[in-house]
Length: 138
Image 1 (tube, rainbow, N blue to C red):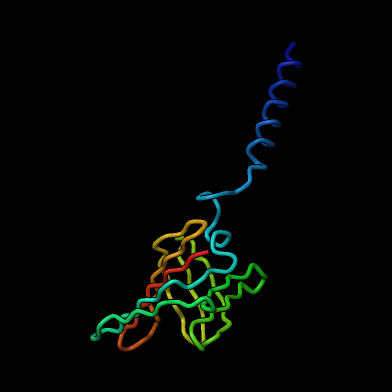
Image 2: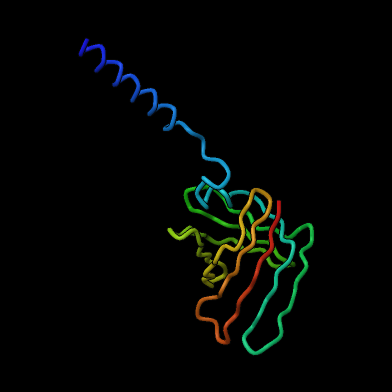
């Protein structure tokens, strides 16, 4: 009887491990890197340079961010006539760092859903301070 109870307990733990261990990451459970992967259309970019008024750029159908899921964590950015290839790194606090055209952008994620990605990027070392707010969609 004791062996049967032990066997039943082990079987129960094994089944529970399979049921919870194979759960697919979806929605809010996914890590930030998985949430941002793919191509995003640029809806709008608001740029504020310290001491000046905010300027707004409205995206066109050819403007995009593409976060690639390759080993190099590449990001391709096309805004207006400028097309840039850089890299990105997701941080433990669910924020990002982007390296584009020799600039480091420190990014705070404001909103991330399956269809909407909004973030604020501060360009590291810029003087005067430059902050851009990006509105992206799929």
